[in-house]
Image 1 (cartoon, rainbow, N blue to C red):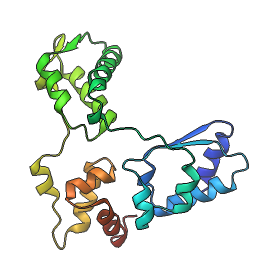
Image 2 (image 1 turned 60 degrees about the vertical axis):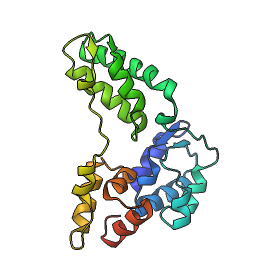
Image 3 (image 1 turned 90 degrees about the vertical axis):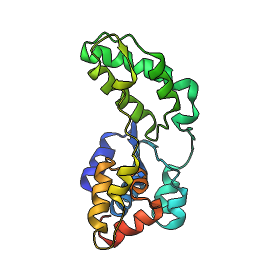
Image 4 (image 1 turned 45 degrees about the horizontal axis):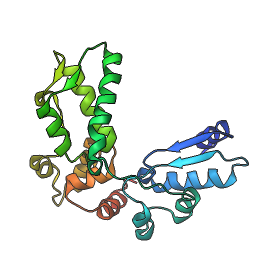
Length: 209
């Protein structure tokens, strides 16, 4: 708690960004609520969550008191897959960014690569797009990115089978799925073939919260 309080004190008069707040454990939610409530000059708080955590509040997976503390004003952002016109604009932006970072001279995505990027589901939204472009720039040996350089991270059927829960090994499968999903609980639930609520219940059951 002291570490969290210290960071909030340092940010007084500024802004604190709580990224993917839905991933906070119950204990950390309580700590965060206590720190915010007792901070004399709390900083401006911007919290991001995917999906909407209002269902988690109803189901008991997220503290309602903390939810209403950070939910004074909500901006709903559509998923990247619903913003077709933005996909290549963002891809070109990150292409230039990673060209500069890695001292490369990749000029563009070819037509086939653009087509694949437009039809991809982008379950990881902009983070996934940045990753795909970054890897493509690193893999490219020329000036044009083709489909073979695109490393999409959408789980395959095999991935779902790998993490399918079986009696007796649930805890290890859940731990592995969360690690594979880089801590993204929504993605982990999809890998396991269960709902976000069920994942929360099983994490609580096995002491993973």
